[in-house]
Amino acid sequence: MEPMGTITDVPGIRVGHQQKTDGGWLSGVTVVLPPQGTVGSVDVGGGGPATHETDALEPSTLTSAVDAVVLTGGSAYGLVTAHGVQRWCEENGRGFAVPGGVVPIVPAAAIFDLGRGGDFTARPDAGMGYEAAAAAAAQEDRHDVGRGNVGAGTGAVIGRTYKGGVGTASLTLDNGVVVGALAVVNALGLPFGTPEPGVSGTGADAPPLNTTLVVVATNAVLDKTECKRTASAAQAGIARSLNPSHTLADGDTVFCLATRALDLDRSTEAARQVSLITLQSAAADVVRLAILDGVSSAEAVSTPAGEYGAVGGSLR
Image (cartoon, rainbow, N blue to C red; front, side, top):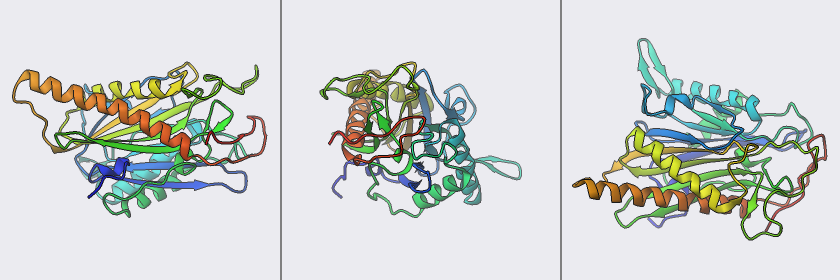
């Protein structure tokens, strides 16, 4: 099957979106649902993150499997969407086994989009998280992924002037390893090469509230520590595509998921290192491509100019 250039080129990875765009809404949630047994970790590189359950993904902690990753609008309020995804996972027997049932491991991260549709209180809730998880589960393997102003990218903005959104990309290495990424681009910076790169359209009273969220997925066999290192390496993709990045005003966060379907060459220590370096370099490249895809896929949309300003248009 020909690659589609999406995170779902990694077999078993599914993506679901839910969003609202009327009645004061301009926000949504995106769920990345991996196959059971997927291992994951995270790297938080920005100075203003809004996250949930990321400590559980550190290599020194007990669990290694990740049941779903939630990317959401609504700033810290939107993290409640993870509760709905946990409920869906529990109903479907996905989670860390404990006496009497399971505890789903569902990390989440949020962008700031409060008030961009005109109503500060219009933000994703647990019900929308549940619906996004169900939507992901209903997809067929290797499905196409909605891009632009969908899911968590519905109210996304870059440079506080132009529309951001959801983007995705993938690369297939010579050894058959697939590396895919999905990005929600709501950054303070603008892509390199655009006019007046950097902070744009900002007044002294503009709130410094921005974030780029990324999920990197691969079919390679990685352990939790290797996922952590891959997530850290993938942060370079944000720096290569947006200027500035990783600022005090950005909550830049990268998750890494490994479905563990394809062994890397670990026949010697040198082979192991080359395999990991090659994969991690590809992760940075694919994140850059996913971010640029999110910017180019965003529609030109005008929204009410409330307390947090108006969204002007797209860079397309």
